[in-house]
Image 1 (cartoon, rainbow, N blue to C red):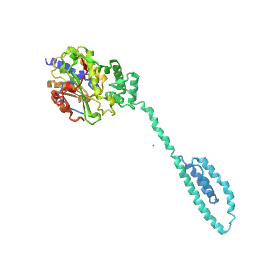
Image 2: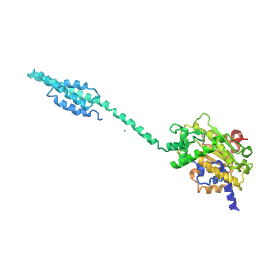
Image 3: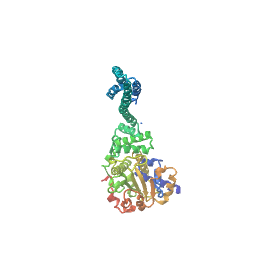
Image 4: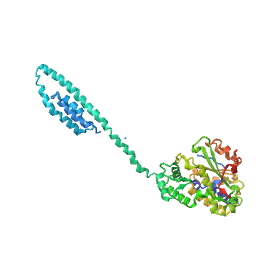
Length: 436
């Protein structure tokens, strides 16, 4: 008797995953277990003119025997154009030598001691001032020209460009373009180097697969192919049966006034399974139910508005996610039809594949406390990072207190009264897929 009841309970709990569709929820293929548990909040871089110096030093050594020479050489040397290289400097130094030879007869004209005394003085002045000083000026003049060399190092960053083509994001972008379908979650894909929304989406696929590029490529390709076939944006415009889906799903959005930060906006999807009037009618046609559920998710993504996002995400930081609330009030956990089981399994598969990394936290409310043991059992198999997002609650009226840390001031108070807030009922403040 007990064994049969637990099985029935587990099957019925899978209803909760009908609205899920997150990659996290496919962690162990038994996500329905998260519905049934007590509340658990585990958050969580010259050559230059050095070549001229040997030349000048040899010239200076010749100056004592050719006293007037330095005066003649220096100006010629100084007049040498700055761009001259070492060879030009050699020519400039050799040229004055012939002009200095006729200059030496002027020295014998005064062989007296007095003339001899004047000559050293003059030679000393000429050799000390023009030669060394002129030489230094030449070196100093050449050095600035050497500074042109660092300009060549500026080309280094350009060499990194080809490497960028091999980053995970650019490879995912290449995969997306090769697939052909141009849109995901209402965002027309573009070059992620300049288009933030596209980069966010591609990063989500990397995050969902723990940075495994091959897996991310595969999932991205399948999502694009699925969207090309299913056309989710068209489903948002489609009218569904009011008899089958009236009151079963809503989307609400709460924004902090005066803030444009992504953290200052909270989007919720609400699945009111206690409002199902006929299991056969609602879950009987699987494709119809899936279309309705996809339409609800796409409405939430419109409110999330990734197309206008300006802030990049990382593996650790991602504010572009959605809260989900599943209400099981008045649901019997002791029975489940084949239609519900089929709808639950297919919804989990479709949503896990095509809507990764979009769940912020998921609350299962009005779940019988007696089913808490299932949640404890689930902890043995589900990854901690996924478990921390599941919050089963037996009392839906205490939901409002769960959002004290939100950047939206008094978020809890904005929720409907039957969830502990002071806001209008879901029928008034929420919106859902079109009905007729």
